[in-house]
Length: 232
Image (cartoon, rainbow, N blue to C red; front, side, top):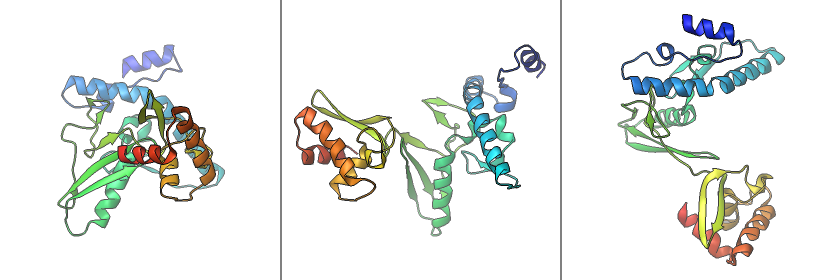
């Protein structure tokens, strides 16, 4: 802590993360990885918290705020300023906790949280969420973050679709919202929108952006969309 104070005194704008605070457990490699991710996310998370508190103050809302963690627990908002990495997988954790509440018969269940960028999969065994025994795995690296066992796939509603040398590619990039919601290019959502006539958002824009892709590749729209559905 003295070293952190010395660094902050010399470089006031520097964000410093300490392993003893972010991951006070044995296993140096995991502690180092956890501290690295903490330092990497601290600035953006602190900015988010500041904006959130400003929004509350603007609306004259005075409440104690808790943040969901990767293991389904919560922590005070200001505590998260030092350990923002604890919020990783908080979205899938919320879905898992919701599924637990709906699973009253102690069944085994698979929970799939499909978002715009990823699809996150977790398990409920005998009515209880399965925990990651070695901590949250981020980008193939284990951490000291207590977490549900979550597998993330780079596939979501906004995943980019394209044709490269005759091969249809889905994801892993996200270029923005689906075309039907005003996004710049067609996504998985647009394919399902057209294929199953869901009529969500601007249906014709989905069709137009899909045709842009298929015309460049010389493919029929129906064939292309069915292929994307099969891949997904």
